[in-house]
Image (cartoon, rainbow, N blue to C red):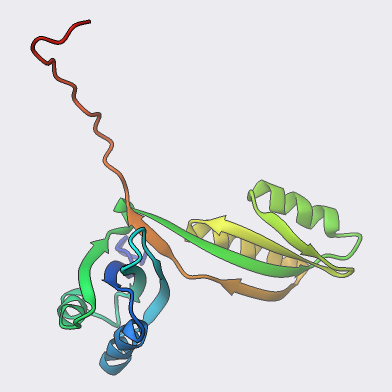
Length: 179
């Protein structure tokens, strides 16, 4: 969020044909227009004919209407949905290698447990930790592990889907039904 309480990014969920060159065409469009991509994640969907791109775009660099208009011109784009941050489930993964000498290892392990992260590799002087969750959780974890010393850090970029409806399904009586 920026100072006015408005989100600083747009989250676009873009359903595209699962064909070679589609990612290149979409990223090329952003590059030509000078739009800043904050993160980009692509993967196949439940239907192997399609892939879903989750594109997080900086608000200042890109007017949303223009982005959507340009994306809709691309042949492989099937559907574009903007996901407002408050109406989306956003997740990201981070792998971080932190210094963890024998004296500090228990502190890093405790921090890992608090964040429900997982230690995926251990060396003599460092540990590699995987943490997944909303972007704020990853920011908080990296801020708290930084004093130990970060050797390497890699984040995946966000993936997002719309939140599900919370209204209960209404059942209605069916005539002639026996109990």
